[in-house]
Length: 232
Ligand SMILES: [Zn+2]
Image 1 (cartoon, rainbow, N blue to C red):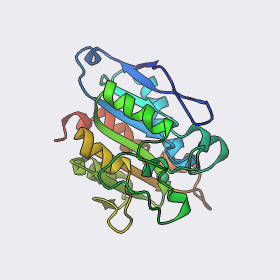
Image 2: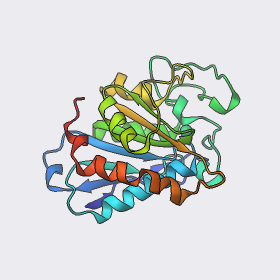
Image 3: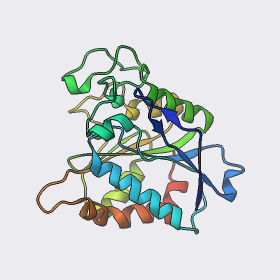
């Protein structure tokens, strides 16, 4: 499918944040978009790799016709430096204006910023959501393998898990994430969010092997139409 580049956002350090929108026949009447996000945490190269492989595959596949927006690297400054946080030292997945946002951080690496939505990378994301309302958000991370869902996308989590056998968690109850996209998406836009945590690089785990282990799941997610028909 064909994608066009939208007007890019700007990071703390003035780098462009690239975003792409699918150009398909269904886009003319599209009111809601499926989002694919990579590298909200800049050091999570594994998740960024999955987002980029999925995006490459979508670009080559002319049978898929649905409204999609892709931001392959949200935290461009962090990605450059292999750093979790953005150019202000803020964890972007703790800086969104959810009801639970708090200035307290359990650890320095979760620094949520001085105010909710203080960071330009998140302002850009929110401006995209306002212009192109999200129907479903798939955000790629890496940590230990787990498919975390917030809002009504359990069916999608189960669908992916049927391929890769990753565990599913309804939310990170054992690991609160105030100001995360998982809180913000359902609360503000009524949008289910799937936070896909793939494994990190280690002996025998390479970027190629992570994509190989998940390739079928994501290709089927977009070709079997479950993404269009699940109840949200
Ligand atoms: Zn992450």
